[in-house]
Every structure is written in structure tokens, then in C-alpha cells.
Image (tube, rainbow, N blue to C red; front, side, top):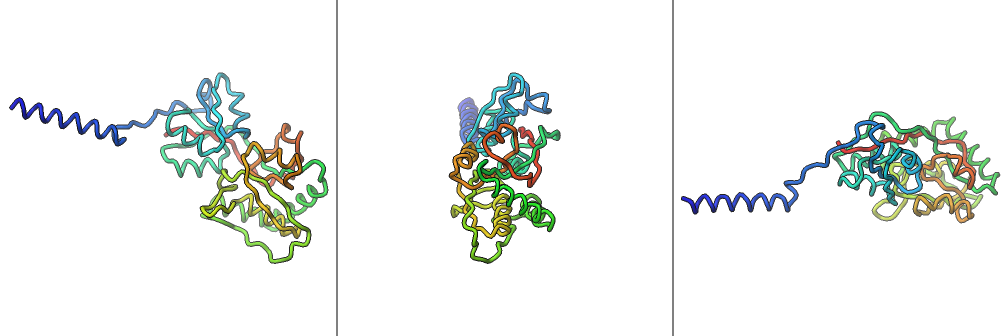
Length: 263
């Protein structure tokens, strides 16, 4: 009888060990942030050089943990490496859906506006882009593109380009394709997203071909400032600091900075 009891105990211990190794015994990491006030003194994840990075740096006693990609910050949150992530609302909703076990705080952190960055030595291009944006806003094209990407189920494009020779040359757009639904990379390496569709529509108005290149987010403004790219379009918030380096078009959309936490 004693041998049977000992054997049963050994089997129970072994089963527990196997469950632990396989992850069945893992417990979700507790959420320490229930409101914006709770961010004080916490570890806050952000994408490098974004406005979320700027906002997090102003939180009292917060330890800001910077990542090259927004999805990396969100994954770190899920694992308990950080206590919260500050990021734009549209990609936040995408990441929460992809990662699971996360949620948004009800209260947004800040409101902001996105613009198209243009070299300060190219006022003619800036004026042309603003004129194109105004026309696209008035005829409903901008709203159609934005609604399709944010509220629809678009995977690659919500805008069909006009056919033509693009007589006015090539407009080089630099972006960071890690910011869905504004821009992301398909499995076959193409850059797609709301910003790409908006710039395609702008280029149709300007009779230009659109060439899209990918880089890290902290390099997009510098690329335009140096003249390596015609424009930077990557969910870029218009700020005074950035306006010291580039000019911005009129805002083409509004967004919010939100806080992601564990459920």
C-alpha cells in the first residue's frame, strides 16, 4: 500500500513538472495600471522617437523602455517586461487584436494630428500637396481611404490608381512599415497601408509616380531633411520640434495617443 501511495505521489509530481515546462502552469502577469495616474513610477514601453516616446519621458519617475518597433513594445508588455505601452490608437487596436490578453485604457493620453513631411527647400511641392489634399478631402477620397483601413477589412489597398504616364516624375516617399493600418509589409515584401493609399491619391492629382521605401522610424525625418526622399509619411505627428527640421502639409488625419495595458 505504501509503495502504491509513493508511486501515485511521484506520478502527481511528474505531471506537475511537465505542466510547468509546457507552459500550462504559467499565470498571466497582473496589470498594475488602471488609469493614467498609475503610470507614475512604472515601466512604460514606447517606439523609439515617436510622440509616445516624448510623452512617456514626461511621466514622473517613469522608466521609459524604448523599442525599434511598436509590436516589440506590445509583446514586452504581454510578457511583463513593461507595465504599459503608449502608442497611437489605430496601431494599438491592431496590436491588441494580434497579441491578445491586452486592453486599452478608456482615457486617451493625448490628441494629435498627422502631416506629410516635406523638405524646407521645396515650398512648391508642399503647396501642391496641400492643394491635392484639399481636393481629395472635398471629393470624399480621403475619408473613403481612412474609413476603409480603420473600420473595414482592407489587406492591401483601398484606392485604385489612375492610369497614366505620370508626366511629372517620381515622388519618393520614405516610411516605417511597422505601423498598421497606416503602413505595413506584405509577405512578399510590398509596403501597403492607409498612408500609401493617400499618397497614391495625392500622386494621381500631381501626375507623379509613387516610390515607397522603408526605413526605421527615427530616420524618416532625417531622410527628407537631407533630400534623400521627397516626403516622409508614416503616421507622423506634427510637432514644433519636428518643424525645426522639415515643413508639414496640412493635417490629413487626426489620431490619439493611447495606453495599452494587460487585461
